[in-house]
Image (cartoon, rainbow, N blue to C red):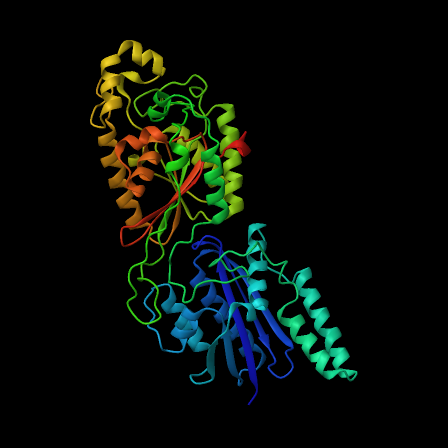
Amino acid sequence: MRELVVEADGGSRGNPGPAGYGAVVLDPATGETLAERAEYIGVATNNVAEYKGLVAGLRAAFELFPDATVHVRMDSKLVVEQMSGRWKIKHPDMKPLAAEAGRVFPPGRVRYEWIPRERNKHADRLANEAMDAGRRGEQWSPSASTAAVDHAAELAAARAAAGDATTGAARARAALTGAGQTGGGPTSRPGTGTAGARPEPEPEGLFAPDAALAAQARASLATAATTDREAAASGDFEAEAAHPAASATLTERPPAPAAPTAPGWSGPDMGAPATFVLLRHGETALTPEKRFSGSGGTDPELSPAGLRQAEAVAAALAARGTIQEIVSSPLTRCRQTAQAVADRLGLDVRIENGLRETDFGAWEGLTFAEVRERYKDDLDAWLASPKAAPTGGGESFATVSRRVAATRDRLTAAHAGRTVLLVTHVTPIKTLVRLALGAPPESLFRMELSAASISAIAYYADGNASVRLLNDTSHLR
């Protein structure tokens, strides 16, 4: 009976994030590549991508030799241990994929072996090629680097046939497993499907903050303009500025893993988080005038600059390829921004009233200086306490916080494991960030949030949350 080797891998740039898998079928005697498979699968976790790579590799082997025995080699301890029957499969996304893998060949014809990551470079490269293709809006096809690998293998095999068997075989193996390893994706980042070390076993569904996104966030916050505290305080007060403390207070904070529940296990089965990408709407005509603009005013439309910002951020989100659903505040400026993204992604926009901005009462349409001149005592009270409401029946920050928290709970329950774009306003976004960080109410006065800027929060089943910020909107001008 013929034996085949299947090597498979998968990765997710964000976990969950844009994901892809790679698999290769090898002749164990010669090291010859018999088949390659790779695919961009959209937004998924590392573990889902790894399982899909396994399924694709087994299917490719079955298509070649249905009666073969198969030796699967993977650098995912999780998949190897689960498919070998030594670890229980708990995550609902893993169970059907494991069952699918188990049905390709009859029981007993497949054995599994864990290998170090550096010995799985061929499948890893294919997975990265698939993710790179997905970023370009394409599906994977054999690339120049793959062709170079095949050509190198052919040359080495020819040399072996000519008599230099030892050197030829070694070069063939090197070509099949190592060539092209530097051209298949971004630089090493643990847990994202790129070359390099990563912890084993990898917990199902844990959130791995995107390093590049986090770095941009920190750089953006550190260099933000720092004008007066009062401007930063005013909710959807247009063209607000940051308190100096903002650059130091908002960083990503992955949840601490719980104590291991079994030998070799590194965390609880929390499942994939509900990830909310928080997008503030684009500018309106009130932005350059620095006026309060809440839910109780004139409901302005996007200005020409705001429309350009909406289109630019839509293009950026489309290129990133992570958004699965879109939810928007009912106010016009948010609906216009959301629709620009929806048109790019081919998605519908669902309206959520809980995402509306604060009602600023009699302050709507006024500048901060005008409010101070007309309603000084009310403004001082509002700045001093989250329970104080704007003049004329507006909403206090405490009221908004309760509304936003209830909306958050409803949306996280409805969108577990999904990446959802929430198009909303300054106060709801600041409130979601504040609550996720466990920060006090006064932290609302210490955050900058530019028009059309993006933040993200991942919510886990155990109640933990992880925050990422990207507040640089220079590319939207």
